Image (cartoon, rainbow, N blue to C red):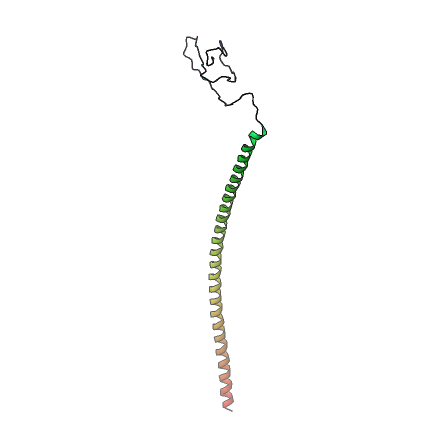
Length: 149
């Protein structure tokens, strides 16, 4: 591994696997050179993680975190509002389903009550009619017998 001015930063020899971390102190292009001494074709896999620090000797302070914490708080509030909206929508949907079923049951109950009242009314009329006929029949016989005296 070579730095931007060609200086050797680190050298690995005869390694199958290796992990190395370093902090870049200079701007520029860094070179990685891999050599295969084996007679067989080899695949090289390596990962480079790049983190950006303007000044590597400066550490994070509270004033650096305040804007981040403020943004996190805003995001948390927005997430809470979204969750509440979803909950409210679900509640509304559940209530609509319950109201729909209750409406159907209320209509069924009203129809059954209407038919029952119609039947009771018809039964009551026939009872009254038959009672009145019997009374009229009794009164007419009484009147006939009274007139005949």
